[in-house]
Image 1 (cartoon, rainbow, N blue to C red):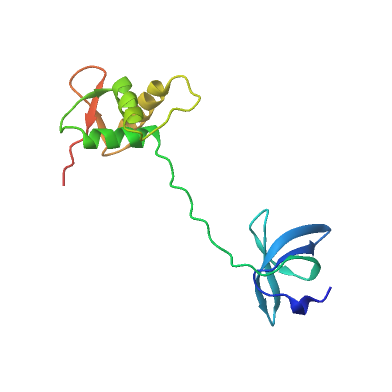
Image 2 (cartoon, rainbow, N blue to C red):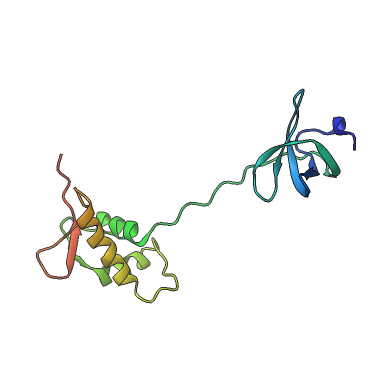
Length: 147
């Protein structure tokens, strides 16, 4: 097929090795034609176009969805919005994160144990943990920030 009549944004089927790859042309220049694969998103140099699939289109970048908070991050947000010095048990934190809509439970049966492990790991490994143990057994509070 004649490779000179294509424009940026044209959908093509190109020969890459022994495979046929669906792609969109990203650049047409003196050095050749560059295209981006639909499947992998990788950019490659086109040597042979087997078929022109579609006319040039305006390529729109779709915005990425906001990343969901982890249970630990959601628990910290709940503690930050609550009264200063408030202590929480792990089950209370899980219930509050769900009530505030910051976190939705998955298929796990024990999110409270997962949060408990994350809090203990944060206390054990960080020099300045974000959550610390309270004076009451089984309760945690937000760490005081010292400058």
